[in-house]
Length: 444
Image (cartoon, rainbow, N blue to C red; front, side):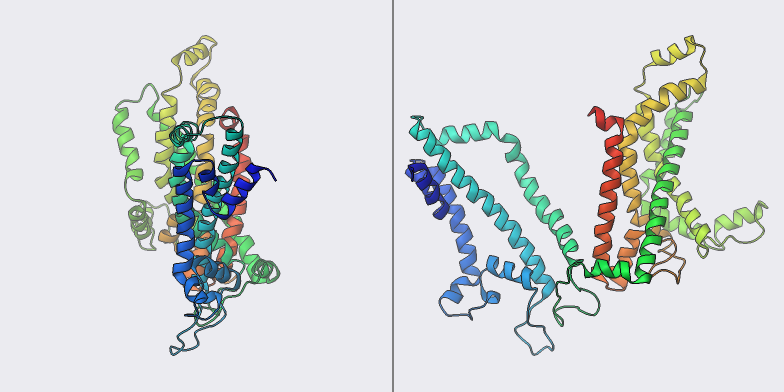
């Protein structure tokens, strides 16, 4: 076996030892300290007590990483049937701790592989007669990997703040974690794809999911399309040549976007009550003869959601499209006038293609946002009116508000998690396919 392989093997066992053999002492010390941290955490959190006989030889009493891997595999073994039980397992905590342990082990594993590769490559450089210097290595690393060094802290933070909760939510879908198995009184068990099978095979769940999914898709397109078209109309009118006081109009129309959405939604909820100001105005104007059941009728409730969402959403598109229109060269419009075109031709063949090309990716993002637009539905109708044909959902519930109800009101965590995974799959496919077909994405 060659020397470089022996050095790589040495570094695999004792981190940094290969660097020390290559006379890179500072680098070797850094890798060795990282290994010491890993071993210290494992020993000090339980493994040392097990090895010395101070604790029972069980993974429950082992170090953080061993206990974490055991916990996420078994989800515990001993439930807490009454308050007198001192030794018990909490399945949810075991799952979360296991995920954290896996992420940390992945980070340590990357450093371990880096340590082996570095020792191997450094030995090759030594055999080729190249000089090794820790200062030169640090300088080269900084120059060649500056971007990775800068994004590494953010990546680690994202892993713990965003990826871990998402992974935890996804794993719950493969367990029986619901109101009948609440830990620590019960041990949660892995059930594989049983939750997904139940959603398909149990008629009430399957029908509810398909109906709510259909309304969610319709709502996403209606909410996005109506807000975009109204914002486009306002932007065109404000930027027209004959429009005066353009800054004033922009300031007025941007107010709905500047006011917190929840405040606006609560105000609109009061206005759209059966005897609210909307019905009163319509009655006084002679437009209607009786109160419109905005909150108690499915069609009217859904219509109200779209109307209110236009109010909340059009200022964003108006400001966006106005900015795009200011970048259009006047020479293009002059060319249309020379060819005998009118205002409609300018809009149809010049303004609209440029606007749509620039805003298409943002339309996709807005569509994704409205697909999960929890605030508008929850604060305006709370998912109502009730619908006995749907399982634990109302007529205006979209998937995200249904998940909210399943989680907090009914504690059906596994079903809520399964629906979340389905939402992700639908959004990933639709958004990815739509975005890749836009001209802006292809040009990029």
